[in-house]
Image 1 (spheres, rainbow, N blue to C red):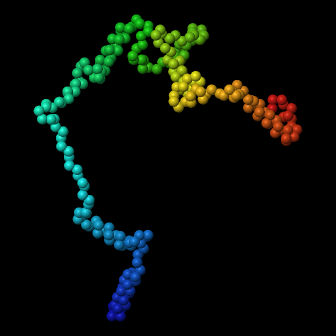
Image 2 (image 1 turned 30 degrees about the vertical axis):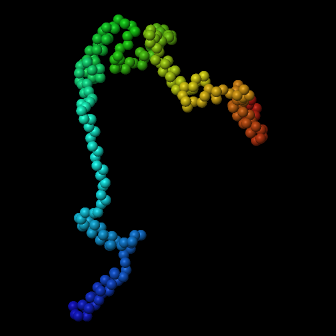
Image 3 (image 1 turned 90 degrees about the vertical axis):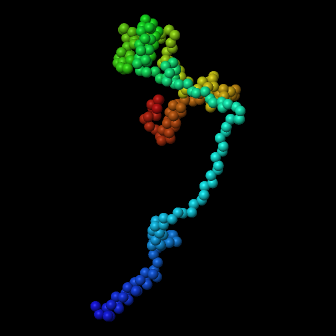
Length: 223
């Protein structure tokens, strides 16, 4: 390459560098360009010096509370051991529980009112469960409740009804209105149920058909 070609290439490089210095890179809404931000990030990564941090104000630990001079220290009594055999809080072993249930069932094997603690794990057939409420000829017989026990199904239905429906004579919860607010006023028509909605609907349909003109459906009395 001759001298003129070298001068031309060198001039083009100088012009490109000058043009790059005049035209700044975008800042993307910040006060730094992408190159400046990259340079700051690299310099921050390279700096291993400790940063200035605020000192934590530590309060001195208070002194221990010691008994007065001349008095013996009153220490609390040690806790009773829970692993003793006579402790009622000690959990019952499976073997002891099985023996206790078996002994109780053996002692009450002739007691018709005895209820075992452990029930049958196998589910009974639905047909057998339904036959218990019926007699030999399929007639309904009242459910027999042992003496001293209550009918759990009836008690469950009563509790469910009490939880879903309020009582007009008893206020069970504070969220329910007082009984005085439930009583209607003396001038209120509490016993007047008004006109039946089905009757009003039939009258409305009949009036709408009359407005449209004659129709064979007008001859049907229940329409």
